Length: 507
Image 1 (spheres, rainbow, N blue to C red):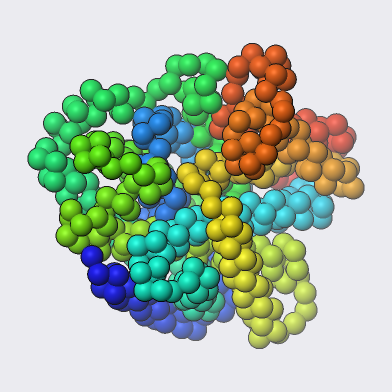
Image 2: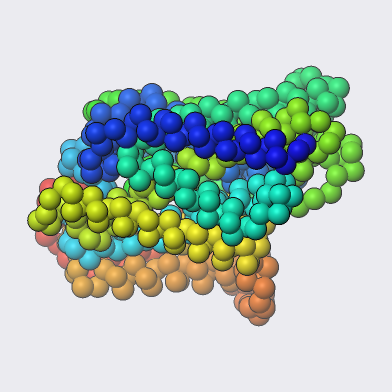
C-alpha cells in the first residue's frame, strides 16, 4: 500500500479531531478543562473510556501475546470486573460526596499535605511513563510502515503528533476529550471487527471453524492452573482486580472523566456499562491474536509479537483492504490514552502540586499557568518517547503492568488506609513509607523473576540462586500491585495513631 495514501488518511483523521475540538472548546474555561463543567453525558464517557483503557498497546500487544500466553490475559480482565464494581460502589460515592476536582485532594483532607503530594507524585510518575510507552509503540509502527518510506525521521514524527494532540486539547480539555474519545473508540472498535472478518475470510474459514481450530492449537486456554507461574489464574484475577482499582479508580485521568458526569447514579452506570463492553472487546482482541497466529503459521510469517498485527494487516496479501482500516484503528487507539494523559497530568500538577485552585488570581492568570504546564508535559512526553526509542523494547504491555505494580502501590495503600481505618498518620513520615514500600516490592519481584529484569535492563543481577531458594520457583505476577499496596498499608499503620481523621470520610 502506498505510504502517501496512508499518510493522507492520518492527516485527514487529525483534521477531523481538530474540527471536533474547535466546536467543543468554544467558551471553555478552567472548569471545562478540568472536569467538563460536571455536565458530561455518561454514555459518551463510558464509550470513550473504552478507548482510553485499551490504547494502542492493547491493539498490538494483547493479540501478539497470544502466541506465548494463550488467552491467559482474560484472567486479568475477569479481575477487572471485580475491581470496577469496587470503584462504582465505594470510590465514586466518596468522590462525589466530597465534590472533588482532583481525587488526590481526598488524601489531604484525610491525612495532610504530604499524603496529598505523595499521591499526586506517584500518579504523575506512573502516567508519564505508561502513556509515553504506549505512545512510543504506536509511533514506532507508524514510522516503520509510513514515515520511514517517506524519509521522515522518527523525531519529527513524534514531535508533529504531539503538537497535533496539543492543538485539540489545550483549550477544551476534558470537555473536548469526552467527544474525541467517543469518535476514536468508534474507529478502533470498527477496525477491530473488520480486521477479524477480513482475516478469517482470507483463510477460507468462518467464525465457528476458526474457534475450533484455535481450540485445537490450544490458543483459547484461559485459566493457568500452575501455582508457581506468573500467570496462575488467582494471581491474574487478584492482580487484575487491584490493577483496575488503582489504574482506574485511583487514577486522575480516568476519574477526571467520571466525576465530570452530572451525578453519582450516572457515573455508576457509566462504570458498569463500560466494564461489560470492555470484557467483550478484550475477548475480541484475544480472538484476533489467535487468528493472526493461525494466519502467520499458514503463511510462514515470523516476526516479533508486537509486530505481528501490523505486518499482516499492511502486507501486500490484502492489497490495502485492511491496511487503511488498521492505520485508522491504530491511531484511534493511540490518542485516547495520550490526550487524556496530558490533560489529566496538567490538571493534577496545577491543582495538586501548584494549588492553582487555592491561589489568588484572575481566571486569565490561572489559564496562563495551565497552558504552560500543558506545554511542559508535551515536551516531557517527547523526551520520554525518545528514551523508549533508545531502549527499543518490545512487548511493552508487560513493562506497563510491571511499572504500574510499582508506582500505583503507594496510591492503593494510601487510599485503602484512609477508607478502611480511622487512624491518623504522622505526616512527616508519609514520604518515607511511600518510597520504601515500592523499593521493597521491587526487590522481591526482582528476586522472584530476575530473568525479566536482566532481559529488560540488559544486565546480570546474579540473584537466580536466591530466587530459587527463597521462593522455591514461585514467580510474582500481577499480584505485585497488591503486595506493594499491602507493604504501604503496613508501613502507614506503623506511623499511625488512634484519633479521628482530619475529615469524617472513612468508611
